[in-house]
Image (cartoon, rainbow, N blue to C red; front, side, top):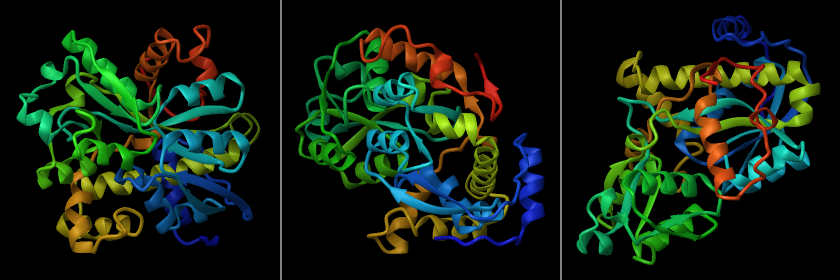
Length: 339
């Protein structure tokens, strides 16, 4: 667990101001648990933890890792986790409707010109002619659970192509990968650091990009308990400021490459402590680099995209049709895009 220190405090203060977030209070002793998945897209959290940005904000952080979005949302609602990053799901929306959680920022978005999530198909399906998203008609698409981001993406692709697909819930990402590689399901969509190595193995094939169907899609969001959003605003601002500093470092190293190859190498070394830990650094590095997608600077939130997701959940009967966007979101912490 990271311990508090004041090294770099002025740097975090300046970063918070520049990003439009409230300056950290630097009060010590605030222990929090932050939920994460072992994905490159969670690198903002890893950087903030490793470079002591959380500690400099007076937050004694413990990281808790999950294998899917829904359990993380439940952990926030129960108080076992204080802050986390995950895709919006039907379960997350339902917990917000019960007054348990609030989305307070944005984490990962699809962006033109930046590599994003890929549409994958099994080798068996590809050999049978499934070589473009238009050919997905009548095929089976993998997802963790009904109302997951995978369900949303697959449905949006189907609507855009004017086709019909069935969906198979497999609970965990690992199970989806196994089913896709063995041909038990036909298709799936996932971030590039998972998609590209799978495609390179020859077991699956990339046939399209999610961004072509969901431009500016707010893939993941930052969320917390309704209590923290309403009653612990200083701590929440401090968390977001530290997280945003981690995001800024990640984008500078991996997207802008401001520090050249040395900066990329240093960032890969940091991320490898959390992602692909079962591989050597040499084998993990290509996958980590392949997963480079821009994270939202300042944890800015695309409200238009979140609204579309909520309306999709409601149209499918996955959440109550009367849930208001304000029930899900607290937009008072970060800059927003759209309405």
